Image 1 (tube, helix red, strand yellow):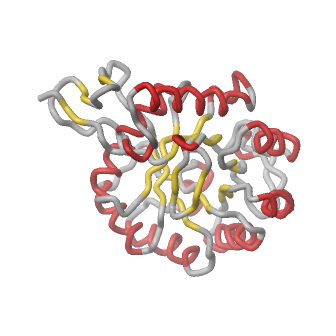
Image 2: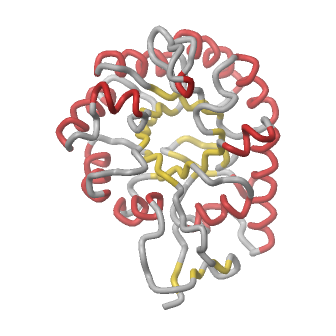
Length: 280
Protein backbone atom coordinates (compact mmCIF):
# COMPACT_ATOMS: atom_id res chain seq x y z
CA UNK A 1 0.00 0.00 0.00
CA UNK A 2 1.63 3.20 -1.17
CA UNK A 3 0.30 5.29 1.71
CA UNK A 4 2.10 3.14 4.29
CA UNK A 5 5.46 2.98 2.50
CA UNK A 6 8.41 4.81 4.07
CA UNK A 7 12.18 5.21 3.98
CA UNK A 8 13.80 3.97 7.18
CA UNK A 9 17.47 4.72 7.64
CA UNK A 10 17.60 5.38 3.91
CA UNK A 11 16.12 1.96 3.10
CA UNK A 12 12.86 1.95 1.11
CA UNK A 13 10.17 -0.14 2.83
CA UNK A 14 6.79 -1.07 1.38
CA UNK A 15 5.16 -0.65 4.80
CA UNK A 16 5.95 0.97 8.12
CA UNK A 17 4.65 -2.20 9.82
CA UNK A 18 7.04 -5.04 10.59
CA UNK A 19 7.37 -7.86 13.10
CA UNK A 20 9.32 -7.41 16.31
CA UNK A 21 12.38 -9.58 16.76
CA UNK A 22 11.27 -12.72 18.61
CA UNK A 23 7.76 -13.91 17.75
CA UNK A 24 7.54 -16.16 14.67
CA UNK A 25 10.96 -15.03 13.46
CA UNK A 26 13.40 -17.82 14.38
CA UNK A 27 12.71 -20.69 11.97
CA UNK A 28 12.96 -20.61 8.20
CA UNK A 29 9.33 -21.59 7.72
CA UNK A 30 8.15 -18.78 10.00
CA UNK A 31 10.22 -16.20 8.19
CA UNK A 32 9.14 -17.38 4.75
CA UNK A 33 5.51 -17.15 5.87
CA UNK A 34 6.05 -13.60 7.14
CA UNK A 35 7.71 -12.71 3.86
CA UNK A 36 4.89 -14.21 1.80
CA UNK A 37 1.99 -12.71 3.76
CA UNK A 38 3.24 -9.16 4.24
CA UNK A 39 5.14 -6.98 1.79
CA UNK A 40 6.96 -4.98 4.48
CA UNK A 41 10.33 -5.72 5.99
CA UNK A 42 10.89 -8.81 8.12
CA UNK A 43 12.95 -8.82 11.29
CA UNK A 44 15.03 -11.86 12.20
CA UNK A 45 15.08 -13.11 15.77
CA UNK A 46 18.10 -11.79 17.66
CA UNK A 47 21.02 -14.13 17.11
CA UNK A 48 24.55 -14.74 18.28
CA UNK A 49 27.36 -16.73 16.67
CA UNK A 50 26.65 -20.31 17.74
CA UNK A 51 23.01 -20.06 18.81
CA UNK A 52 21.36 -20.19 22.23
CA UNK A 53 19.00 -22.56 24.02
CA UNK A 54 18.34 -20.14 26.87
CA UNK A 55 16.93 -17.64 27.63
CA UNK A 56 13.84 -18.58 25.64
CA UNK A 57 13.39 -15.09 24.18
CA UNK A 58 16.81 -15.44 22.52
CA UNK A 59 16.65 -19.13 21.55
CA UNK A 60 18.14 -19.27 18.06
CA UNK A 61 20.13 -21.49 15.69
CA UNK A 62 23.04 -19.08 15.25
CA UNK A 63 23.95 -16.41 12.76
CA UNK A 64 24.76 -18.73 9.84
CA UNK A 65 21.18 -20.03 9.94
CA UNK A 66 19.87 -16.50 9.46
CA UNK A 67 22.55 -15.53 6.95
CA UNK A 68 21.46 -18.42 4.72
CA UNK A 69 17.83 -17.26 4.85
CA UNK A 70 18.89 -13.70 4.04
CA UNK A 71 20.83 -14.90 1.00
CA UNK A 72 17.73 -16.77 -0.17
CA UNK A 73 15.34 -13.83 0.28
CA UNK A 74 17.57 -10.92 -0.76
CA UNK A 75 17.51 -11.54 -4.55
CA UNK A 76 13.72 -11.12 -4.46
CA UNK A 77 14.09 -7.62 -3.08
CA UNK A 78 12.88 -8.39 0.43
CA UNK A 79 14.03 -5.87 3.02
CA UNK A 80 15.49 -7.71 6.01
CA UNK A 81 16.40 -6.47 9.46
CA UNK A 82 19.00 -8.64 11.17
CA UNK A 83 18.99 -8.47 14.97
CA UNK A 84 22.26 -8.98 16.86
CA UNK A 85 23.16 -10.09 20.38
CA UNK A 86 26.38 -11.36 21.93
CA UNK A 87 28.24 -11.72 25.20
CA UNK A 88 31.32 -9.84 24.04
CA UNK A 89 32.17 -6.94 21.77
CA UNK A 90 33.92 -9.32 19.39
CA UNK A 91 30.87 -11.56 19.10
CA UNK A 92 28.54 -8.64 18.43
CA UNK A 93 30.85 -7.38 15.66
CA UNK A 94 31.18 -10.87 14.14
CA UNK A 95 27.41 -11.44 14.04
CA UNK A 96 26.77 -8.00 12.55
CA UNK A 97 29.36 -8.44 9.80
CA UNK A 98 28.08 -11.92 8.92
CA UNK A 99 24.54 -10.60 8.45
CA UNK A 100 25.82 -7.58 6.55
CA UNK A 101 27.66 -9.76 4.05
CA UNK A 102 24.53 -11.88 3.60
CA UNK A 103 22.66 -8.88 2.23
CA UNK A 104 20.69 -7.71 5.26
CA UNK A 105 19.53 -4.12 4.69
CA UNK A 106 19.38 -3.01 8.33
CA UNK A 107 21.42 -4.28 11.28
CA UNK A 108 19.64 -3.92 14.63
CA UNK A 109 21.97 -4.11 17.62
CA UNK A 110 19.74 -5.49 20.37
CA UNK A 111 21.70 -3.86 23.18
CA UNK A 112 18.56 -3.56 25.31
CA UNK A 113 18.23 -7.26 26.12
CA UNK A 114 19.27 -8.41 29.60
CA UNK A 115 21.58 -11.04 28.06
CA UNK A 116 23.64 -8.29 26.44
CA UNK A 117 23.32 -5.80 29.27
CA UNK A 118 24.55 -8.32 31.84
CA UNK A 119 27.54 -9.38 29.73
CA UNK A 120 28.87 -6.29 27.96
CA UNK A 121 27.04 -3.45 29.76
CA UNK A 122 26.61 -1.28 26.64
CA UNK A 123 24.66 1.40 28.48
CA UNK A 124 26.96 1.66 31.50
CA UNK A 125 28.10 5.02 30.18
CA UNK A 126 28.45 6.88 26.89
CA UNK A 127 32.04 5.79 26.33
CA UNK A 128 31.09 2.13 26.66
CA UNK A 129 28.23 2.58 24.22
CA UNK A 130 30.49 4.43 21.81
CA UNK A 131 33.08 1.66 21.91
CA UNK A 132 30.64 -1.11 20.98
CA UNK A 133 28.54 0.74 18.43
CA UNK A 134 31.56 2.43 16.87
CA UNK A 135 33.25 -0.91 16.21
CA UNK A 136 30.18 -2.25 14.45
CA UNK A 137 29.71 0.94 12.43
CA UNK A 138 33.27 0.65 11.20
CA UNK A 139 32.69 -2.88 9.89
CA UNK A 140 29.24 -2.93 8.26
CA UNK A 141 27.71 -1.23 5.24
CA UNK A 142 24.05 -1.78 6.16
CA UNK A 143 21.97 0.88 7.85
CA UNK A 144 22.54 0.61 11.60
CA UNK A 145 19.85 0.55 14.28
CA UNK A 146 20.27 0.34 18.05
CA UNK A 147 17.58 -0.97 20.38
CA UNK A 148 17.41 1.24 23.47
CA UNK A 149 16.49 -0.14 26.92
CA UNK A 150 12.95 0.84 27.96
CA UNK A 151 14.32 2.14 31.25
CA UNK A 152 17.18 4.22 29.95
CA UNK A 153 19.32 5.77 32.69
CA UNK A 154 21.09 8.17 30.32
CA UNK A 155 19.59 11.35 28.93
CA UNK A 156 17.94 10.65 25.55
CA UNK A 157 19.58 13.73 24.06
CA UNK A 158 23.07 12.50 24.94
CA UNK A 159 22.37 9.07 23.47
CA UNK A 160 20.83 10.58 20.33
CA UNK A 161 23.82 12.86 19.82
CA UNK A 162 26.16 9.89 20.16
CA UNK A 163 24.15 7.88 17.66
CA UNK A 164 24.24 10.73 15.16
CA UNK A 165 28.01 11.10 15.55
CA UNK A 166 28.47 7.37 14.86
CA UNK A 167 26.16 7.39 11.83
CA UNK A 168 23.56 5.24 13.54
CA UNK A 169 20.46 5.79 11.42
CA UNK A 170 17.74 4.29 13.59
CA UNK A 171 16.82 4.15 17.28
CA UNK A 172 14.42 1.37 18.29
CA UNK A 173 12.45 2.71 21.24
CA UNK A 174 9.65 1.76 23.62
CA UNK A 175 6.18 2.74 22.51
CA UNK A 176 5.12 3.44 26.09
CA UNK A 177 2.37 5.96 25.44
CA UNK A 178 0.02 6.61 28.40
CA UNK A 179 -3.00 4.30 28.40
CA UNK A 180 -5.35 7.23 28.96
CA UNK A 181 -3.92 9.39 26.17
CA UNK A 182 -6.67 11.12 24.19
CA UNK A 183 -5.78 12.22 20.67
CA UNK A 184 -8.00 13.52 17.89
CA UNK A 185 -6.61 11.64 14.89
CA UNK A 186 -8.17 14.11 12.46
CA UNK A 187 -6.10 16.98 13.84
CA UNK A 188 -3.29 15.16 15.65
CA UNK A 189 -4.05 17.14 18.80
CA UNK A 190 -3.67 15.50 22.23
CA UNK A 191 -5.52 16.73 25.29
CA UNK A 192 -3.51 18.60 27.91
CA UNK A 193 -0.28 20.55 28.02
CA UNK A 194 2.90 19.77 26.12
CA UNK A 195 4.80 16.86 27.65
CA UNK A 196 7.01 14.00 26.59
CA UNK A 197 4.68 11.07 26.06
CA UNK A 198 6.95 8.11 25.39
CA UNK A 199 10.50 7.05 24.68
CA UNK A 200 9.66 7.23 20.98
CA UNK A 201 8.43 10.80 21.44
CA UNK A 202 11.54 11.75 23.45
CA UNK A 203 13.99 10.45 20.84
CA UNK A 204 12.06 12.05 18.00
CA UNK A 205 12.17 15.42 19.78
CA UNK A 206 15.88 15.38 20.63
CA UNK A 207 17.16 13.86 17.39
CA UNK A 208 15.99 16.87 15.35
CA UNK A 209 15.12 14.74 12.35
CA UNK A 210 18.57 13.15 12.06
CA UNK A 211 17.52 9.81 13.57
CA UNK A 212 14.67 7.62 12.45
CA UNK A 213 12.73 6.12 15.35
CA UNK A 214 11.06 2.70 15.42
CA UNK A 215 8.31 2.08 17.96
CA UNK A 216 8.12 -1.33 19.61
CA UNK A 217 5.38 -2.43 22.01
CA UNK A 218 1.64 -1.89 22.16
CA UNK A 219 0.97 -2.02 18.42
CA UNK A 220 -2.20 -4.09 18.21
CA UNK A 221 -4.08 -2.25 15.49
CA UNK A 222 -3.94 0.51 12.92
CA UNK A 223 -4.89 3.17 15.44
CA UNK A 224 -1.95 2.19 17.67
CA UNK A 225 0.37 2.50 14.67
CA UNK A 226 -1.16 5.88 13.73
CA UNK A 227 -0.57 7.21 17.26
CA UNK A 228 3.01 5.94 17.28
CA UNK A 229 3.66 7.71 13.98
CA UNK A 230 2.16 10.94 15.32
CA UNK A 231 4.55 10.68 18.29
CA UNK A 232 7.54 10.43 15.95
CA UNK A 233 7.92 6.81 14.85
CA UNK A 234 8.96 6.19 11.25
CA UNK A 235 8.10 2.49 11.60
CA UNK A 236 6.48 0.14 14.11
CA UNK A 237 7.30 -3.38 15.27
CA UNK A 238 4.50 -5.80 16.17
CA UNK A 239 4.95 -8.49 18.83
CA UNK A 240 1.92 -9.51 20.90
CA UNK A 241 -0.57 -9.34 18.03
CA UNK A 242 1.72 -11.55 15.98
CA UNK A 243 1.78 -14.13 18.78
CA UNK A 244 -2.01 -14.10 19.04
CA UNK A 245 -2.91 -14.04 15.35
CA UNK A 246 0.08 -15.27 13.43
CA UNK A 247 1.58 -13.69 10.33
CA UNK A 248 -1.75 -12.21 9.22
CA UNK A 249 -1.55 -9.61 12.00
CA UNK A 250 0.98 -7.55 10.05
CA UNK A 251 -1.23 -7.22 6.98
CA UNK A 252 -4.28 -6.44 9.10
CA UNK A 253 -2.51 -3.62 10.94
CA UNK A 254 -1.11 -2.29 7.67
CA UNK A 255 -4.59 -2.22 6.11
CA UNK A 256 -6.09 -0.52 9.16
CA UNK A 257 -3.35 2.11 9.12
CA UNK A 258 -3.87 2.68 5.41
CA UNK A 259 -7.61 3.13 5.97
CA UNK A 260 -7.04 5.71 8.71
CA UNK A 261 -4.62 7.65 6.52
CA UNK A 262 -7.20 7.70 3.76
CA UNK A 263 -9.98 8.70 6.16
CA UNK A 264 -7.99 11.70 7.36
CA UNK A 265 -6.89 12.83 3.92
CA UNK A 266 -3.25 11.75 4.16
CA UNK A 267 -1.50 10.60 1.03
CA UNK A 268 1.46 9.10 2.85
CA UNK A 269 2.36 8.06 6.38
CA UNK A 270 5.31 10.46 6.26
CA UNK A 271 2.77 13.31 6.50
CA UNK A 272 1.89 12.36 10.10
CA UNK A 273 5.29 11.37 11.53
CA UNK A 274 6.02 13.62 14.52
CA UNK A 275 2.95 15.78 13.92
CA UNK A 276 1.43 15.30 17.39
CA UNK A 277 0.32 18.59 18.92
CA UNK A 278 -1.17 19.54 22.29
CA UNK A 279 -4.38 21.39 23.11
CA UNK A 280 -2.79 23.67 25.73
